[in-house]
Length: 345
Image 1: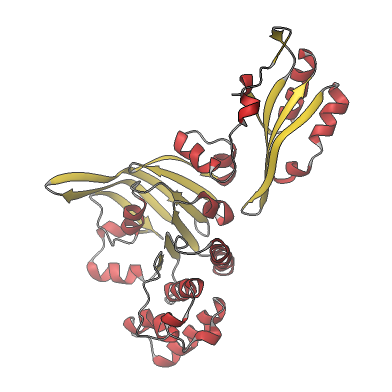
Image 2: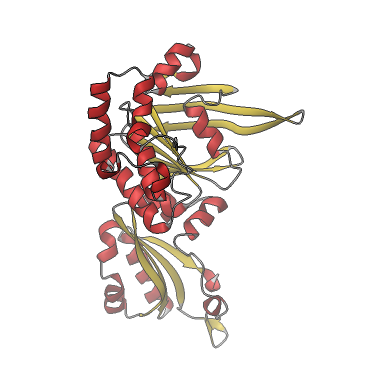
């Protein structure tokens, strides 16, 4: 659906060149929800604006639905953009127009007959749950309702791709959750490809299938949600994951010496990552029973990555060295993510 190759974007600022995007390579499949996350200044907004040619790339290729966006005429680009919807952090609604006429606006520009506009707008307002707000003005709406209008407007021309640039950053957590639920529902109903730009990992974990981590204009890591959450490879990805699932070992545990009588004991501190059905397995009771070890839960939680349970458990296992090693090997054989933390660090 979307293929980006060697994408570069260079801006001129005070007589100097600023390279906002550096050799970006990215492939997004049809019908998936793809997250792009990065801290402020990473290049996220430049990337999303290049995807629909609001910003012209300095170099590289952008192919959407088989069409090379950087090589088409101005007329062809206007047509292509109708298949790429976009929603923004601050909604960008026309405050002098009603909800109905905000959603109708792109259809009017496209020259759609009035009868068809009315039918399409009402259909979209039902889809986003605002059929009773058709005659309201944006000033009369909550933040979540405004974003729902923005989503309906972005869907007016039946796009194949929906670009979301920090679409929930101006919303409270409860409203954010409802908007993300709406996007997930639209993705399922319309088989719409969604690209979600954000600096919040909590947003990514709610609905994304895959994610790319952007830093200093480069994609430094990308993969499935499970891969990124269970085994982040870069410090930036680890920071984002830790913002949702704390990876910190408690201070009192870090400072505890895993020794007995001045010698190494069979005591190990182990982090266990559970994904999917493995989150419900009684693994602790099994290793206690089968390997004659003691198991002390230091901390743990279970969340969800989109629709998959995800557990993060910090466990202290004690026994003789042979027993603890066998218990850890058994846990690894179950396909769980296992990290042995030496000296509690």
